[in-house]
Image 1: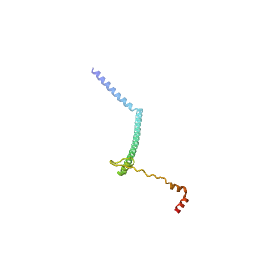
Image 2: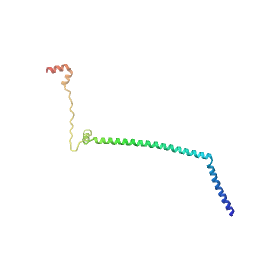
Image 3: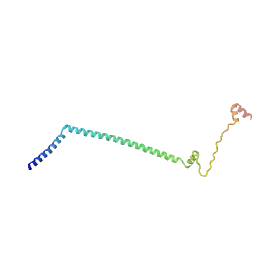
Length: 140
């Protein structure tokens, strides 16, 4: 029995060494080395391309953020101008004239605009012409 255990250990060790040697020989084969090299080169090129695209995206995002900031500043400036331009008197005028609002206890009277009635005398003067007007002015 002792011999069979020794033979088994020797065979087992021999199979381990042959597997290691065959894997080393496989990695030393020129086609395998060439294939691994090509895969590494493709991976490097792909990573470089992704890096370039990321930088371009970063620049475009920065430009968009700058334009958003400019628009926000312009919007704030317009809002500031709108709020400062409307004083209390301006707001009251808008409320009275356009919205027809009134203060409590206040009575509003609306006076119609004066209509210009056509004067018959003036119409006749225009119909007579300038020569008749001069005669009338000089003789009167």
